Structures are given as structure tokens and as C-alpha cells.
Length: 400
Image 1: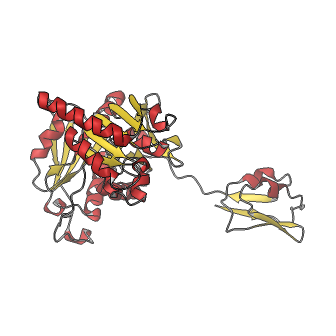
Image 2: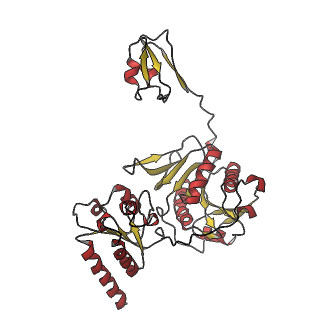
């Protein structure tokens, strides 16, 4: 798309200069001129010109797909070395709700090599069908291999909705599949719903630094694709009485399809914290005053049988590693109990923990925003309050 100014028609009225929101038009010898580096082809100048001197050439719209041919909700069942990722179970729970609203089948898409035992687990957690691609070249995740297989399956079976976890692998896989299928992708969603009248997936995610929530739709392309942050959705209870279908599919994948070969998987020797699955989280923020405060957080977390979390401010200060961070740029969690110590409650942090079952906030400032989402608020010095909590927790454990 491009913008052309017809010199013979331009009267030099400067209306287009006023209309341009990007300051992309200037005058030269009494005629308007487009600054192509600033112009975004928005078309505001064309509608402002009263003399027909501006033409915006628009690309022809591509042919709209037959959307009625696409049916079903798919969840990518991520597994690593034969172990199903917890995020996949969360997505199955959400996928079950979406499929029920649409009145369609929920399928789990499983790629790997000799991971047959996972199939029944996926059915027990809500899948009606498991589409199982078993191949030696799928034993370890590769971008090329997994993208090709999933894109081929979608082209063949035409799923309506595809949901992928926003894990390290999911963030790599989803955009590549979407690009290959020429469809849209909404990343890092925190809420999914269905417009049942139009059969459109409503994909909600934080925008502008978490200051507002944007709901995005994909009206003219299929499948509708989303990645979902781990810890946001709630998994279904396991039902071993559920039955389903395991469909083993042929895989058209060869060595020459892969540009990268995995020779060996070396796990990090550093122990990382599992915030997503934790039932008790004790988080510290800037109010701790320094890195030594996290020793107290660890003591309370150990007493509860939980883990230590952190706000971004504490991570940025170098007091604790990033794998402890809770919030929009960290992990999204929903534990049974979340204890926020010395955390003011910026909206970016609240976005990562506000769905916890019970939130306890400890802060000196009675006006701290964290209290607006807390179930229980304690106004006081955390270095006095937390030791008292530790003592009480230990007493309760001794009584049991």
C-alpha cells in the first residue's frame, strides 16, 4: 500500500498536514510531499483532501477461507523426555470449557517417540481424542520437526482453535506454526472465552505494561491460535473413568527436514524454583531492604512447605534470581496461599498472583495497592510479623 500526491491537483491548502497524525507530510514549493520514512499509509490524508489530490493504493484483500470447514479445539500436549508438562493439564481444563461452549470435540496433540503411556493421562484430564504422532525424529523437540508435523496435521484435519502453553518451547513453536498457516496468534493470554453467536475465540491478554486488558479476535482466518501463560488456567480433576480415542497418525518427517540435530540434553545443575505448581508461596519485595531479607522469606516458606517468590523490584536490585519472579514479566501463579511481604502491589505484580486462593499482605504502608486484592492484610514491620508467623506455623505442625 502506498500514498501518492497528484501535483496537478494539489492546491497547497495544508489540510493534509493537519490531518496526518504522524507528521509525515511537508510543503515544498507550495505542494504537499509525503515523507515515506514517517508515513504509515493510514489514509487520514486522503479523506482530508477536498480536491482529490491524494490517492492511497490499497492491497487487494486476500480470499477469505471457508471457515465452516474448521472444527474442534486442539491443545498441544507438551512433553519433555516422556514427562507431560503441568501446563498441558491446565490447558486441557480450559480447552474443555471452550469445546463444550462450541459443542465440538477436544483433542490433545501429542508428539514424541514411544510416549504411549501419556495418551490415557490426557484423556483422564479432559481430552476426547489424542492425536498421537509417534516418530523417532520427534523424540526431542526441534523447531523444524514439530512445526512441520503440527502444521501438516492442522492443514489436513482443520482444527478451529489451537492452544499452546507459553513455555520456552511453546513461545518458539506457536509463532512458527501460525506463520506457516498464515493465521493470527495472540501471545501470553490470561483469559479465553467464546463468542457463541459468532463462534469466535475471545483472547484476552495484558497490554501497555499491564495497564489494560486487550481482547483480540481472529475473525477471518483459521485456526484461531493462542499461547497461554502457565499457572493462569485451572486443570480439571483427574477422572480415570473417562474414555476417549487415541488416533495414531502417520508422520511425514525425514532427516533433511531438520536443520538442527539434538545430540545431547544437558540439564542445568542450578536448582530452579517451581512457582507454577507451588501451593504456598512467600514473596518478598523492595520492602525487605536487601537480599538478607530473603533468608527470612525462605524460613517461612520452609515452615509452610512452600517456595520463595519475588517482585520484579527485588530481582532488578539483584537480591534474588529471576526464576523467583512473580508478575507480568515473571511467572503467573495461583497457589492456595500467597504471602506478599514488603510488596507494594504494582499492577504488573498483581497480574501474576491475583488469582491465588488466599492472599496475605504484610506492609508498613496502609495505603499500599496490594491490600486491594488481599484477603488478609497486616499493617506492620515484616521483620516483626514474619517471625511470629513462623512460630505459629511450627506450633500448629507440632500439634498435628
